[in-house]
Amino acid sequence: MFGSISSSPVPPLSPTSPDPPQTRGSSQNLFPSSPPPCWVTQARCDLAQAETELRRQQDRYKAEIDSVKRGVDRAILGVRREERRLVERVEQDHRDTQRHLEQVQRENLAAIRVSQSLLEERLRKLAKLQQQIQDGGQSRKEKGQPALREMEEDELRMSFGRFEEVGIHLVRQFGKQGSGRSDMTLPSGIHATPQGQLFIVDCGNSRIQVTDSRGNVLQQIGSSSPSASRKCRNYFDIAVNSKGLIALSCAAERALLVYNRHGRMLQTYGGVNQNSSKDDLEAPRGVTVTRSDEFLVADIRKGTLVALKLEPKTACRIERTVVTGFHRPYLVAACLISGLVAVSERGSETGRVPCVKILAPDWNTIRILGVCAGMGPVLLSPWGISIDRDGNVLVADWADQGHRIVLYPSRGVGQPIITEGLSSPRGLTILPEGHLAVSDSMHHCVKIFRYKNNQD
Image: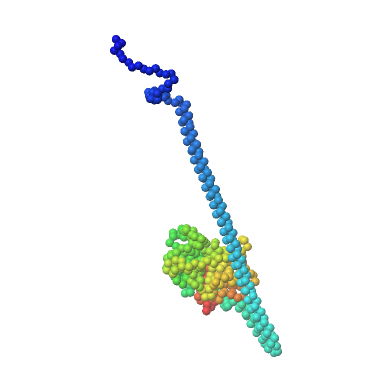
């Protein structure tokens, strides 16, 4: 029965013979390896987390390095900028000091010229008198007395310049406290046109009163803002040019407002609510019109005078001139005939005394008033100023002994001409007929004084 079963002989396996490769492969496929232990899996997971955290720390470290580097760079740039600012400030201070020294030198030379002129005038008179006395003989007595009288009269005329003493007295006054059409409250700046119209800053009512020389109201120019907001606008000074443009300085808004002759606002220069540049006005106070029909503005904060040439219809700026070298300039006046300009300075606690400077048309200082008792009253608090065609300067001074109007003649020694009846006079202007108009603030009126018979 075993004969039907056949089998092929199998060669014996050598104990040293290796397994065939296909046999090992077949064995692995048939019997896969078992999963790694749990601790291996955990170790791999911890290793991956550690690697991730290391990379994260590396990124943070790099970010911190970059941040520190940027901070150092910014600090270096900041130091360099501050260094540049300090250098520029030192250079600017040096330039300002140099300008101040040059201005002081010009002022000293101007004072020397005035003193020398007065001395030479006196010496000429004495020489003339001496010559007349030395003529001898019978004519000595006859000529001596007239010469003495002439010298005394010349001395009196020299004390008043070409001002003809006619007896300063009040001609009329108009206005009273209130808000009616002809009323005023705290009048401030005042300007007289060549036609005899008066433009008056009615500060308390935030408007401009336009009157004739007798006080008849011709026009009113006011703010379009509500009454509550108009009370704090603090209009200050006013000027009108030959084209009818009206310039009004506003202390509260730190701006110069320009209207046309009909009272419509055209332009605003400076201002706290505008994007101002370094060339804009910062604190305009006094304003006047020059011989060249430009508005001249005193900027008390910048210490400058700014001359603005404006287009007649739109009041857009055509040209701008800045004159530096002033210490808190306050009010300003100009003579349309001679071109002379008078500027008041407020003084300060640092030793700068109040004064009035007289400038030639080329902006050089030629006289300084109110600082030397030998040349006239020493000013304590100069406000309104005006200058006539002969070069005589009038100043409203709030002195300890009372508020007064002081006249500084073009040649000679100044003296008070109005010492009573004024309370806080803020503005001065000369009418074409030669009368002096004063805005008497605390009396809420305008007073007209006889100053000269005429301006011819």
